[in-house]
Length: 238
Image (tube, rainbow, N blue to C red; front, side, top):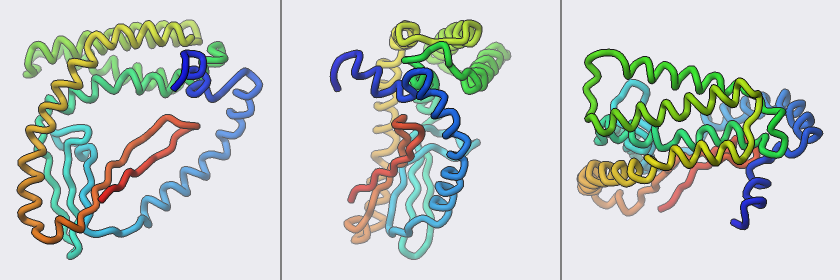
């Protein structure tokens, strides 16, 4: 993708202080676009049969990419969450670096203009997770539990610092990401192994149940990319 400077430019889309002000004014209008997105989500295109690989529903133990939902031509819906809660925790922990990046990177060219509203919201969630970790009786494998607490503390430390000073430079973010990367690669490897072991038998079962309809199946993977604001991309392939 190019050198470090080009990568900063690609993410620091808010530019200098002048452009940042213009974008802040534009954001007032963007709420209307969110209304458009809501409408498109509600109306949607009906493609059958289609399999959606996405997050588990709220309150359902599973995880990010851990739920299979099959919408059949006869309008029946089959939903399976084969992944265990440990998979969800591993993926959630590993996503924190990217999550923070999407909040602070727009201001890399004008760090003093950092808007800390989202950081404060995220920090509150992290503090609540740390508080929950201190409640007696948490039954999670020790290595995973210790990793989670360590990563939450890293996030807490850096977010508190950035909020207090009212800025976050690219160098400060890189230092934060380096600390997090002590844990992320191993988390992803373990999560991938869990996901494959859990999903593959279910996919084989669904294929057998669908018979000839399997050859007509579309697969939909909802993803979010931090490009020029928030753009939701739905990747479909047959």
